Length: 228
Image (cartoon, rainbow, N blue to C red; front, top):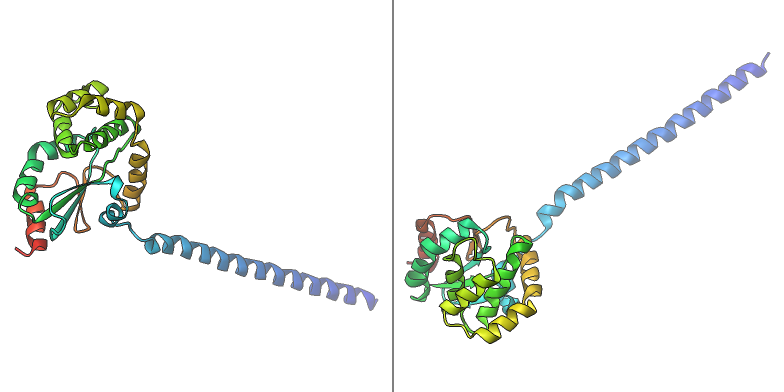
C-alpha cells in the first residue's frame, strides 16, 4: 500500500518539471519576440536618408548641373517626363526660377535624370543623350512642351532635338544604344533611398518639397537660405 503514494508523488514531481520547462520556453519566446519587434521599429529610424546633392557630387556622371558652382543654394529636382505635375512645373515655373535665381548666381540647379516607370525611362535616357551636346535643360523644356501623345516617343525625342538644334546623328545613335539606361536605374535607387515617393520632388539645401508647390514657396526658401 505504501508504493502507491510514492508513485503518485513521482508523477506530481514529473508534472511540475514539465510546467517549469514550458514556462521557460514561453519566457524565452517572449524575449525573442520583443527583440525582433525592437529591431523592426529601430531599423527604419536608424537607416540614414541619402542626400541627393551629395550623391550627385559623388556620382557626377549621373546628374546634370546648371548655375554657379559656389551658389549658396542647391536645388535638386527629381522629375518624370510622363508626370503631369512635372509638366506643369516646367511650363509655369522653371523659366522664372532659372532667370531670377540660377542666372543671378543664387541657386545651383541639379537635375537627377529619373523615371517613375519603365515607359518613361527612354525619355530620361534621351535627355542624357541631349546633355552630350550640353542641351539637357533645353531638351527637357522642349519635351515638356510637347503633347502627351508624342513626348514619350522616339519621334517626340527627335522633334525636341531638332527644335533646340541638336546634331541628329550622334543623338540618334545614343538613343538606339540606350546608352544611359544603367544611370537612370542607379538614379531610381538613389531617389528611393532619399525617400522620393512621387514626382516632382525637390530638395532645397536638402530640405524636401513634394509636388508642384507654389512659386512663392520656392522663393521663400531661396531667399532664406541665400541670406537675402
